[in-house]
Length: 232
Image (cartoon, rainbow, N blue to C red):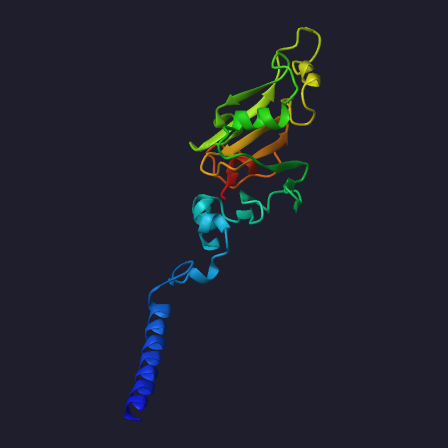
C-alpha cells in the first residue's frame, strides 16, 4: 500500500517539475519561430524569408529617404517598393492576382524553376517556337533600369535592328511575343538571384509615375521602380 502511495506521489512531483521547466523555457528560451525578443509575435509564415514585418523600413532604407516616403509591400507576392504619396503625380496603387498596378505602370510576377537562369526561364516561357534569328533574350546592366543592386539581373526580349531606314527601330518586335518584347518604352524582366524561384516583368513606359523618395542633388527623383525589391 505504501509503495503505491509513493509511486503516485513520484508521478505528481514529476508532472509539476515538467510544467515548471516548460514555463521557464517558454518565456525565457527559444520557441518555434525564433527567440522571444519582441519580434517573434510579429512574424508571419513565409514573410520576408522569415524576417519580421518590422524589418521593412530597414530593408527599403526609409531612414535615408525623403520625409513622407512610404512602403508598398505585397506579402502575397513578396514584392515591394517605396513611393512619395504626397507627390502630385502619385497614381492609384492596386493589386490583383500576380500583378501590382501603379497607375498605368505595373509589376507582374512569374514563377520559375530555381535551377534556371533568368535567360533560360524567359526562353522556356516566352520564346518556345520562336526563331532565335527573330527573337532572343538580351541581358543588360541593372543600372539601365535604375536598379543598382548586385544580386539582381535584368533582361529583355529583343530582336535584330530593323532594315527599314524610314521605320521605327522596334519594327522587328512584331515577330516576337506581344506585350513582353522590347519597345520604345521602358520595360524589362527582373530577378533577384537570392530568390531564384520567381521573376518580374516591369512595365514603365516613357514617363515616371511617382518618385521613390531617394534624395538627389539635382532635385530630380527616381521612379518608384528604382526601389523595387523581391524579398521572398
